[in-house]
Length: 270
Image (cartoon, rainbow, N blue to C red; front, side):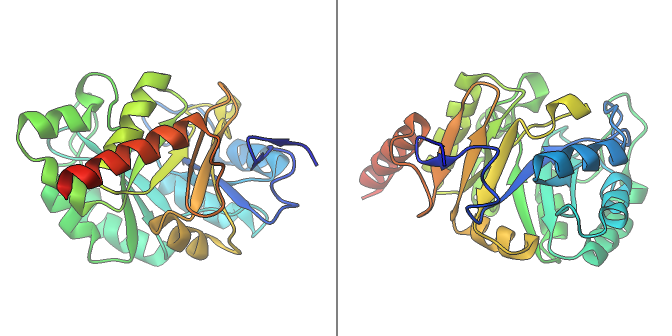
């Protein structure tokens, strides 16, 4: 079996017992997506991976994927919500039913009709609403461009403490630069948060470019592992590697930087 930096290559992760999932992708139900759910599932099946269809402020794509997958592809129920401040949160649910309840109670009637689709809930309100359910709440592309840059906004408003209320940080996003991803990993280290990764694909071609992997039998166990950092990230496009937890590669440049940043913060706190 071929290895690179101790991590499984894309074509052998199944045989080594890992469940690898693209944690961030969009279907045609997102205002900026063009991929059909069937095409996404077919691509995921061909790659032997799972997916989380996290469309903008809608769960139609996630619901359709759960219905069509038939157990052949692992699908994590999820949504990417945009708050009143135009900042994004990504929410993964342990139960499809709770995802539907959350959407009906807090999103469906609160979406605006602006060019940039968002809700009228503020960041703190959105997090509080999601906490009524069993969820994993993450910050996608926290060092994204323009208004997508969550951290810059929180720092300017002196509201960095909101990061502490999240479960994780998207450390590797295939649409961002290496520098942007490294900043995201450093941010996770400074708040002692686990990282996850995804392609942020808006077309079928990019599905699977970044995967989050863990030894898990189902997506519920996968989310449990993710919450405690027992996972790692594999990226194909630029051979990006980042890791957390015991099943990791200590030689990874990203991992070295993550650990160094974490040690610095801990020493500073002490």
